[in-house]
Length: 169
Image 1 (tube, rainbow, N blue to C red):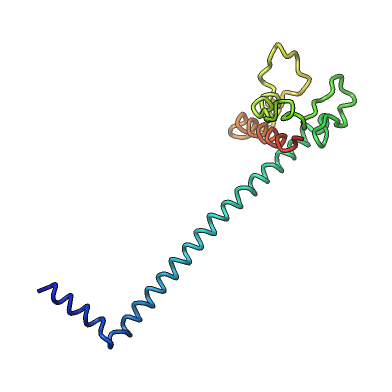
Image 2 (cartoon, rainbow, N blue to C red):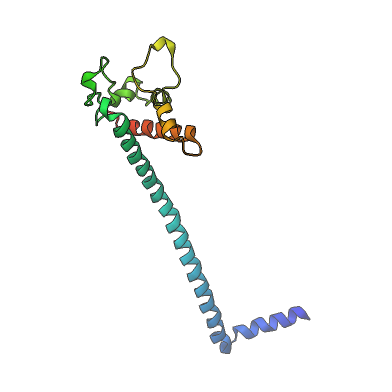
């Protein structure tokens, strides 16, 4: 009995006089589809925006790395990292050409080694005494008022090292 009532209602909806009511349903369906389409486009724009914002934040980190490099390293290693900074003439040992690190390491930038060298807290006795400042300790002292000075120092060292990876020739 219930099936027969449903069948009759379906037939009534398909009769010629029911098309205007169906049109209302189609308009509703169209509005719904339009809303879904708008939401999909908005979501896609957000996702694409994230794809753009992330590289911009990397660019900002690169700028920060360059700023730190120029502030702490540039006087010895030079603006371009070639070891020709203004202080380099008065040093007994010529600063390294930092643009050749990848080339000297078989085409692979030695990020961990560069981080360790900049940080300077880990000394390797067989390599002799380093003439370079122990930047890790200096950065920690500068960040001593912050919550995690060691983490701040490590982050600064890493940003400088990552900047150096971008100036390789």
